[in-house]
View 1 (cartoon, rainbow, N blue to C red):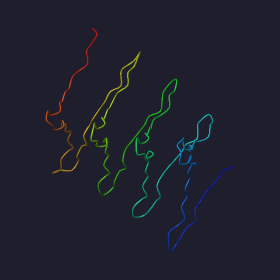
View 2: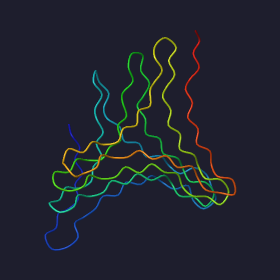
View 3: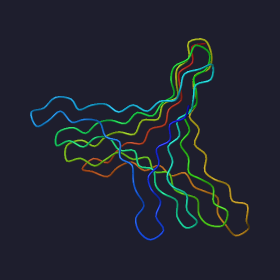
View 4: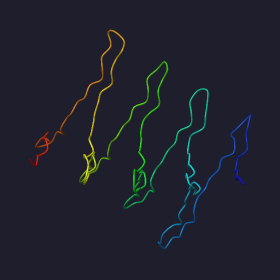
Length: 173
């Protein structure tokens, strides 16, 4: 049967919340407890859905954040699992808007005093078929007196400015 955990509703104040936290090791180090949420196993595996609350004004946010540390924070991995025939796709996109502006998609690394992280976009290799492509496409505009989207590339500023290189692949024939 189903298991349903629901916090209390409220009409004149703050409704109840739900907090799931695994155990801490203590003050002398060690590894904290893990928290796993998974869909059921079957011929078609069960889905796991995480979503913010619905609202007529502004929907709730969904925040995924790695663990904080004074030395090295944890990492976040979002990926589909391996498969013998076809692995699942991974999609990251913002919602559509009927009358306003759709949301932005920001992909950025953090700043650093020593060396900032890189942004790497990579199409997969193939042993027997075509390699994976990378496609960047700016948005179209369908209303007169409006502009289509732009694609801009900028190298960084510094004592020696960053390079901007485009090169095609080498052929074997």
